[in-house]
Length: 255
Image: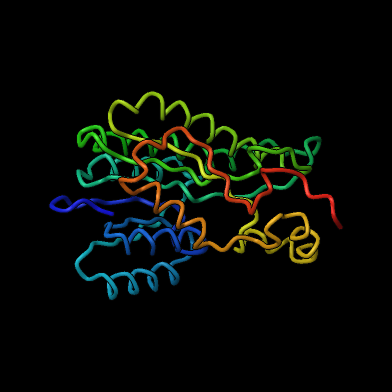
């Protein structure tokens, strides 16, 4: 929950829909001002802004159109974060998928995905830590994937981007811990969003291999973000936090 007497802002990339929108709503409910980015979903973003402003009129909300694949736009957002003395948290939720067998990777496409999923995060963190260091408190959270933890056919590039995020955030956690800043990596499994729509034809088979027997809901991932933003999570740092219905605990062999 946001501290009394000090306005606190959290920036969320990819906040207009799916997991990102639930993160934005949850943080607003916890008392934070929220700045979220979107790339194309103008209508969804404006609808979400209207909802937030109506529900929490005493807080500040803004949406920023940002293509994380464009370094110049990332730089502009980085400067905005750096100039925000109220910035308390950064949640890097935006991401793009890329399915290709390792022998069939297109390097140009792979580099674009790495820019969105990983390089944009490293740039945004350079801006975000200025106000966080000044306040001697802050939270950096990467919404990664279980793909960073397990080998999955056709997932080499996507897994590499999330694995890079994981290694980077662990280093950030070590470097900034004494400044009161934490950095953690959330590793969702299958979450019921547009990104998993391509699995519709095999969803039943996938769910049989998840110990919980179902896909996660976006709000369940958002609830973990909310906890990490809270004072109760001060000592959680450099951690990998799977939220995958038990898939990380073992292999389900039933058909």
